[in-house]
Amino acid sequence: MPQWAGDKVFFYADSGPRRLMDLFSVKWSSMVLHALWHWPQPAARTGELQRSLQGISKKMLFQTLKELEVRGLIHRQVFEVIPPKVEYSLTPLGRTLAEPIEQLYLWGLENQQALDEMSENLQRHHDNTAGQ
Image (tube, rainbow, N blue to C red; front, side, top):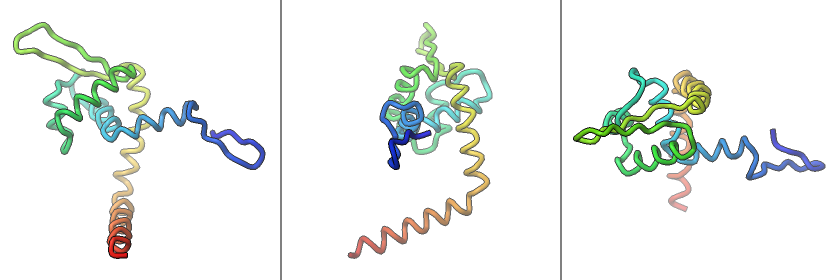
């Protein structure tokens, strides 16, 4: 919850909820966590993840994986084989975050028509303001 000072509300930068929302500012973080949550094996290789996440570049996937690893949400395991093999899996902390992300994705599935309408409204708004 935000904090109140008199009749004003404050969302402090160091609050837990605000720091959590910062995770979603990286476009692919929730997608990677969600993919690993549903991954049929205990861990996924980089190429497999990239093929499953339509539209992510290799560079962005590596950046996202590194950030999630540094934050302690995923585990990176390097196998000493040739060719090199690296696998990623959710940490226990990552699993606790993937659960509510799953709820957001379910909401998205249940509300696809509303999301389509939102996109159309936004596009119309941009089209109308572009000519002004």
